[in-house]
Length: 161
Image (cartoon, rainbow, N blue to C red):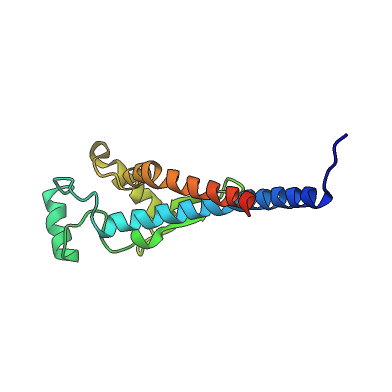
């Protein structure tokens, strides 16, 4: 026969409930945090020109036009239409999921779809100008594991309280 102390059992159930609640919170919050972090990293990679050393502009004519029109030759920066549309948003297709990138349907100042010309630029000249792909790879290798461990630690911390 086992004697079960009610107070100890209540504490165990309370702790397990707290861990379950934190796990459910992390399920939605972690996805949002990751999407926000990736979108901020992508914007930072544009503003710092982290991937700007592509060696050549699209063409000499384009380089001359861009220098005259906007005053610089920075990659992924023209009139600011791309950078203002990079964000984190709830997935239009998945429940409890978040995405990072260009909000579907976003249009530039001329009415063109931003996601369309972002896709063209990403794949230009055999994918030599990647912004989103490189940002995603760095995030996956450097930040995703840390954020996952932190979420796990928050769940486990409910056990030690």
